[in-house]
Amino acid sequence: MDARRLMRLVIVIAVLASVTVRTNTEAMANQATERERSAADAAYAFFDLAVAGQYNALYDVIHPDAHAVVPRVVATGAFEEIYATAQPDLAVVIDVQIGPWTWPVTGVRYEDAATVFYDQPYQENGQTRTLQSEMYLVEVEGAWRWFFGTDAAYVEAATERYLPEGSAGDPIDALTGVPLIEYVVTDLDDFFRDAFASSEFDYRSPGVVLVPPGEAASTACGPASDGFWAFYCPPDQTIYLDQAFLDDLEFGSGDFAVAFVIAHEWAHHAQTGVGIERSASPDEYGELYSIELELMADCLTGVYALDARTRGVIVEDDVQEAADFAITYLGDPPGIDEYSERAHGTAEQRASAFLVGNRDGFLGCGEAL
Image (cartoon, rainbow, N blue to C red; front, side, top):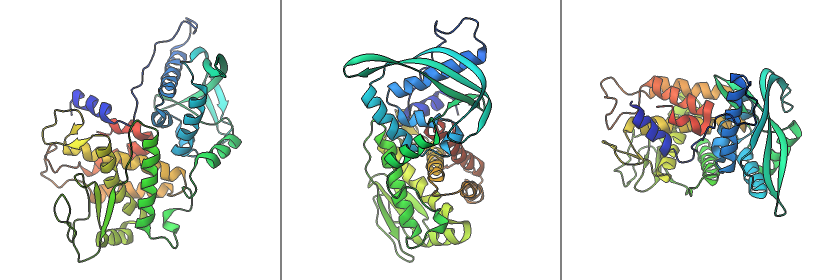
């Protein structure tokens, strides 16, 4: 896949932000080390996201340990309230120090963290004031990540304030009294609505049709009859689900394999909502080859899984279960050309795309291809 097409993919993932990375400012000492300068550049990129209101992207670049305890909607809700009130201007990095640091939220110690000292102009009662503060960064696979929450009490209070009632609970494999498909549909709808709320796009719920065994449904994309598994139809913005297939899948591969299938189709609805569509010969903004569209949907499924795991809806084993399911059942058969109108990706590509989204959030989905 050439660089031009990959760049287009990065651009059209509309819930993300374009990050402006500055060079080190004069406020930093000329003798700063390369790691100190790179930490300062990363901090500036994070400040840019905050000031631009790109809260989904800002959440994506927090540390994985923070992802594990802070749901997306909690962080984006806090960002929206804080920055709408403060109306901050761009911050200025004053100094960076490398050394050990302990995150008060979990008590985990990081031996080689960057403490970034900065000045942040903001508005209060019509007057410009300056906050002098610091943020803490830790490298993960060569990229700096930051931490949401000054202590456990703050994270707990933010969770109580911004996490919608019913969004957290027992893992889906422990559900009682609620049909699995109904639960997953509701949870996916809530997740994407919250994600879109932190973007410039409006969200509308898709239609969902569960086709009983032995029956068929008419769709704007053709009939949905026995053995169709699942698909999303852009013309009628509806997800069609084969109940017999999903029942067999739940029994054979587990609860989250069912959620994976539904989430993948929901991701196609999200793509439609931001103007991304399938094309045999893509040359316009938002047009993608089939394989690109499908791998992006797998990646977005991983983003949902990351959030569901943080909220306790699934557990770590469910993530591996989904990756194993993709490798076992979802790869293109031999002979499918990479740019075929039917191409979805090899089993390894699909599992990898899912895991990238699960690790890096929406920002990772431009790289999963």
